[in-house]
Length: 148
Length: 421
Ligand SMILES: Cc1ncc(COP(=O)(O)O)c(C=O)c1O
Image (cartoon, rainbow over all chains, first blue to last red; front, side):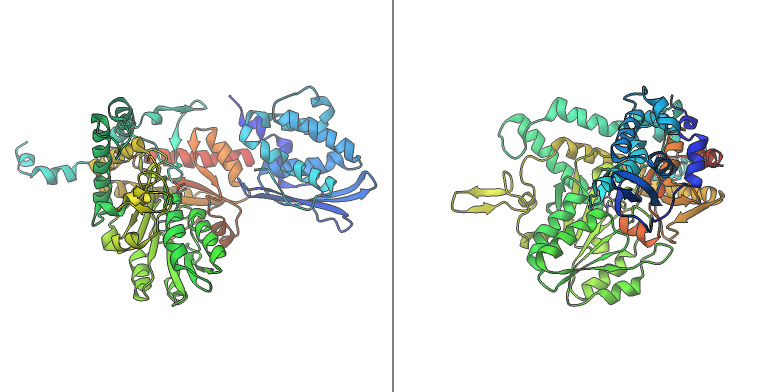
């Protein structure tokens, strides 16, 4: 039986209460909006790109603890990374939360706390909303991304 | 024995205490265990569970009656047709329509409202006209009218509500004008539980000759509905929210209006003769029932109505009202809880938010304890916007719920506090 504590780990709760990089970047040159109509979660991800590199990242919005913590920890993990690196992290993160592969858990570092999400399939969208939004921002897409 | 025996049988029956455990035994799914806990099903506004009598009716239909209706001279077809039309009569009596021809079977509330919008609406609403709804409508009583207004160049107007989630009747009346061609309003709000003052609203609309479409999806499971007493022009509801099967619902419409309306869909059953040059449409109610209907669903709906009648809608309402009052008190007293929808007249629904914790997280934590609630916008995004919240937690009650289950909900919410402490 899945345990609540596997999902709501201390680190996740802490990030959801005090999200990092929670700001609209003045210097942003790319941004995207993400929306999960199922629960009304809504985030904007701001990027200051230096060529191919994420020099600064910020996010704002409202959502459940999982989506907010995921957004917060995402900003920490991709700052300073290239577009390709960030996309690779997302790919691994996605495999982790959907339960497809735990083999890259070590590489994911702190993000590995989200492994419990795989026991709660309906919450996968919460954990990946910010990442999908990041992906759209990196692509420079203008339309809103939706997880439905 | 002797004193009791003097009481006439009927009165005695009314005075029998309400035995919820006996009712629970009628619903096989309530024996389910969820994550090791007994299921506490509080998502009845989304769909109710089904009693054995309804499940049996579906089985009986397929085992003994299945044949296409209105089209065969053979034995089974006659049996099926007869059963189908008997069910129509059961529905008629249930909502006290004047005539069984006023009962149209649909897939549900959504289809019933779309039917009115696409037939009556397309004929009567033109450029510059208005359709008036309220701020607490379900998407299925917003979008069909929006689509109609867009097509016709008409305007959708919205009557506001107060912070309790009560319709502002005066504002509603002010919005009625000669431009208003249709009023569409929910009897009971699914997101807030508010019971609207329908009779007054209908009288006000009728004073200007405007017909009223009622979304009765959340009313029929919880209140006695009398369409003649309400004097509504159309009334839509779904079987699955009132202990019946999915896929079957009802549109009630006044004969004169239905007669004058063009058909909705074309096909078999809705015609009386077809040539390539011209089709003559069938009479009511068949004009609006194109194609093979959900005959098993109709059998199940009939069984659901009979089940409700067997208990008595007054008893159902009283029991649910007790649960709602108790839950309002118990849940409302928990720290950080804000109730959304505190109208004086309410049915079955307790919607709330918790400080600092998103409804989606609450939903997961309750689910771990076997408690099924709905979290989200409840297909009423404008209601969420009105209260400046993204979503609520909604507990909604049915005849088989108990005070013990309300206690379980309160315990579950305390657990939320523990996790998020
Ligand atoms: C008030 C209200 N109207 C309409 C509907 C739509 O009903 P259905 O999905 O059965 O067509 C619902 C239920 O979801 C409802 O609660």
